Length: 275
Image 1 (cartoon, helix red, strand yellow):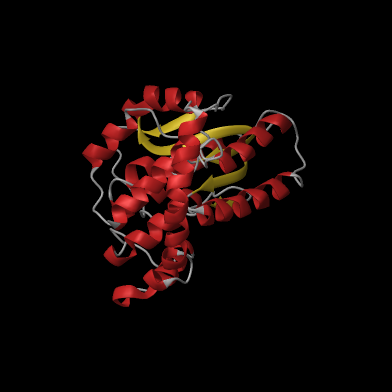
Image 2 (spheres, rainbow, N blue to C red; image 1 turned 90 degrees about the vertical axis):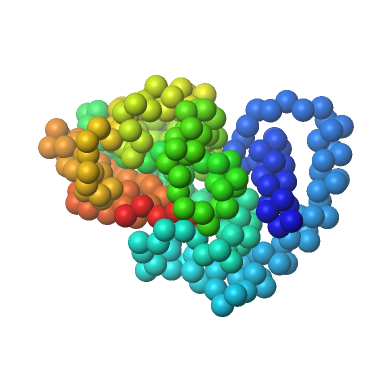
């Protein structure tokens, strides 16, 4: 029953014109009003139970809010799944306003930093963006797979990627557009593989993302860690004369490992861990 309620919330978030994903789904006004009226009591009933510090945060001996803090602070590492008793807590965090507020804080800080940049304007200043859970959201997928409480299944996830339907994260898009406006070139560095290039480009463009410097994908045969892969690619960029003025991702492995960039920013993601 709890999972059904969470999935219903996701459906509302995805069709609402003011949703975090800004999807352009056209629905009759009367139908939207009816949905809002029908779901409003459910949303309010969930908040006291699943919100920050709520009952669910300490059920089964698992302090879910503290666990999420440990994840974001990089104190909890090398975990394979979200604790089973935290499915509702993480689901509510991701679907409710808390995730959007936390993301806004990160992007506001990034934008404040951008205002301090002294740019040479030589076309060599870049900002590195991760894609999954940084630029595009896979929440529609994870909402159907326990918000990270089940083991990652590469086959089903890759099938979702090939749909090319992942919505853009609006806060990240705000930073992306600002960088373009001042002449800093965004560059994507992702753990997605080369065979996913075409669908990734199509997905980004369908969400209003364009004008990037390059899209770097993992090449066949790479066996190292995410840190080794991404830091190695950043080193190649630096060796080619590029200046990484900023670097943003949802995983610590996106932003650690020299050269990290002049300034790094981490977006929240309590659904999975990549080392």
